[in-house]
Length: 240
Image (cartoon, rainbow, N blue to C red; front, side, top):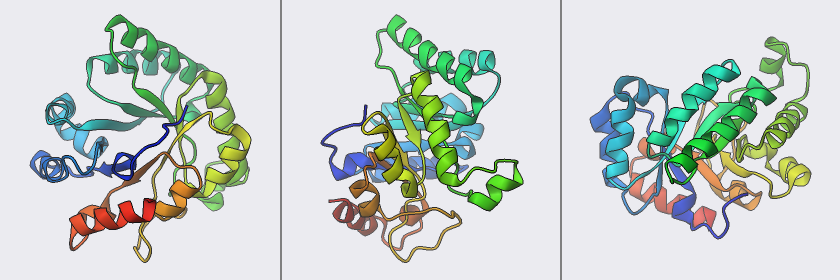
């Protein structure tokens, strides 16, 4: 189920897309108390692994591990069982991995968390990447419209017991129509008005939350801003 009554600062997930640990840590320290959750993806994780998660958790950060697991079901199950040892709040896998993979992930994450008496991290299924549109879907052999493909994958994730979805803000309206409040919705491709980007399906923070987003993943719009603190405040105002 989605989070309710989240404050604007609780909705923002700052993407730490840096290869350098010190650079990433600078941003965690800079926004302690102003942002709750930070995204660690492959750019940072491949250089520093579990150490970066442990360090940032010790600093009080909530963590979104965005490695988008996608492999045969047994491999992904064995992988995510290790997540219970880490202090993360949510993680991603690809819905294209199919029902069995997602079901085994959903069940194994809960089992491991229960064994360790820890809160279960949210399982988030990536539907269609925000860098894709219908032309790029056709290039990889998917002839559905973006909408139909997202709804199809969301339906499989629903049956598999996955907690939430990662999708474009442009898909929020019809996901809500189809699934109501079934999923926690995490939205990348968030850009304040006038910002340039390399993603095809984007949305402003205020529009995304108005349409039902729970969390917003924002990176360069903040980290490359002339005044990052002012940008954070502008985003919070837009969300409000």
